[in-house]
Length: 454
Image 1 (spheres, helix red, strand yellow):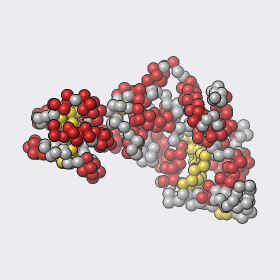
Image 2 (cartoon, helix red, strand yellow):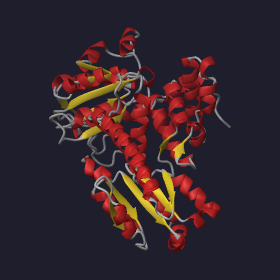
Image 3 (cartoon, one colour):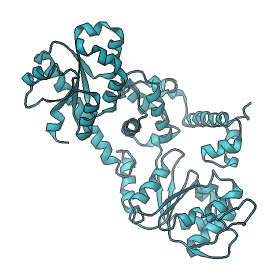
Image 4 (cartoon, one colour):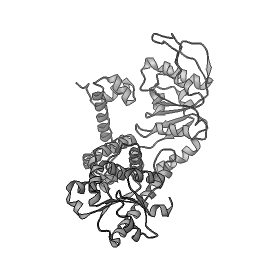
């Protein structure tokens, strides 16, 4: 971003009353671009980035401000790279609703009449904050080349490995705790590989009923079984020329592990109900949150398939092991949700919220962070997200007395109980929603002492 762009100030002035006065005080460091409507201001923001914005509210624009308050808030809070200053007539500040509006939406305010000795330092301070925000944003963008954000030593090492893995057209096994972002890794491998123009097919091996998974993977012919009214192309065949991502590979039944091994050896598949071998050419990425080596020892996973899949191995670290990454991730998630129109009045995180996020152990990893930031955007009524908005007030308070295992169990219990409640106690539907098998869900319920809800 060029410095002159960051020193240009966007002015929302519906009545055009301040154009001459601002022109008088313009300097090489602060020039002013005027917009006479919200639509024009939004268009200018799309054309280039402004470090600072001024919104003029005098006696002539009070009715406009009150009538368009929500639209102005969307404009101000939606342009997260711009620090907005309200330029306000003193009489307007007597209105408590207007006061609340200014506090919620703006970085600072300046009372009329315009005084260069007060306004220009205020603009300079806002420019400084905008530059700091841009620097953080640039750091995030650099560390998010693969769509995965982080600057910790653990993630820097992970990115170095990714640079090599994406170029090799070989199977990859991705390990990591639930919620660490294994599917994002698979997407990045596909996006940066020589197969990026091919399909990206996802199959969650733990979310499909055992009796349906063979048809899901291999497809079937019309009449192959009761209910097979037409031919279906399976996920493996659909991935031809692209990448097949098998999530929770550890939940794949042993019989189908043998079938998958045969596909990887012979590069052909046979649809259910057919004898014709169909050639396939795809890259496979598999992911698991369990230790497959232990599963091999226990006879739950085929050793030969394990070695076929584990040609290249990527291990995602848990969020608690990524020192300093939480603020970077939280900011990236915040900006992404805002850009998708899921934002609120908030324009960032309070210092207390950042401290709380850094202190928390994140048993649910990145997935939990996304959920908490999303919740905060909905719940926040202020310009800065608080610890309470994130739902971390109590968690941080008891952190010293809570073991990591306890924290994980608490998070798992909340998620399982919420899913069972949402699915009216239907374990099969809850398992599909959570992306695990029914057996895994029953095992979790037993471990967490969760009885079926009534």
